[in-house]
Length: 368
Image 1 (cartoon, one colour):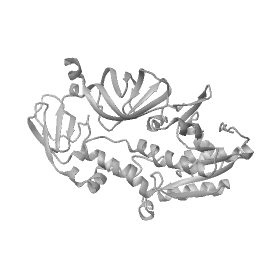
Image 2: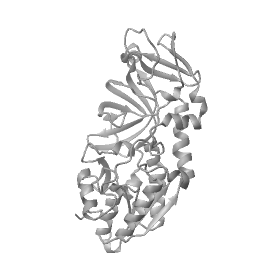
Image 3: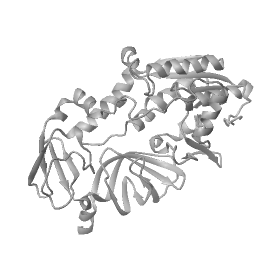
Image 4: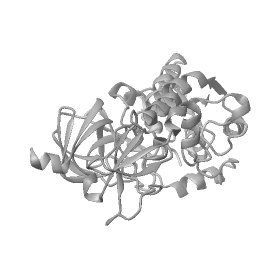
């Protein structure tokens, strides 16, 4: 299978840089690039110190993954570089992740990583190498309409990763390529197996890459110990009805772990007050949100007010009206938390997005 990378000059004269995480997806991108006849260079990010990385098999950009990426490059006969971005990754992603939880927010670290080290810094590095493009293994599609590059959802809805790429700029999109956007995962694995790549059956990375055991609360508690302090659980009227073991264990919309009893109906976390170490809980209807304020909005589409928006990666898009940095949902949306990403679409096309800074409850909007 020969994949078109959409380059403006002959492939025999072109240079393609491939961002290689050590997984099957980016390895197949490198395979596809090598088959074009262009000069190909693989680049992998080292995001942890070497001692820690060796323990993190199965997590993106870990020790085993770097070895796997190098082995694939050796088989393909292409050079491989490893960039030490540990300090940048800690500053831009891990520290901000911990800070957001300490503020009672629900961060999306994959989006932060893509906006920082994985795109901004890697794009700059690829340009320094004189590359014609930077290719990645993300399941999204780059579509050119009227000489303008657009970012669309991946053809396979089960693999689509557009939610995490809302921070991509128009300038970056001109330079980026996503060769797997039209392919199902099964085909990608078949291509890897057919080429004899050792990563053909390698499992996908799970959870947050820098928390491979899934214990994000443990990480945040080590970095921000104040988040582990116990506090009160109060109802919507302010009445104390229980205690919690630390705000780090909770997000807006959560029910599990609330130590309250004797209530007439199930209760959910409605708000988090980290300064007072307090959880405000209420029935599910109290989670209904009419509007969301979006900060640091990145926009790569045309001016458009009537849109669809996703406020969680696995949630279906819902209709909304965009007015500046304010999103008004046409129907109440549930479980919308500050810190989450609001990602905006027009059908299959990604228009942009930003971080949710605050919400307006549906009941308050009706009373206004």
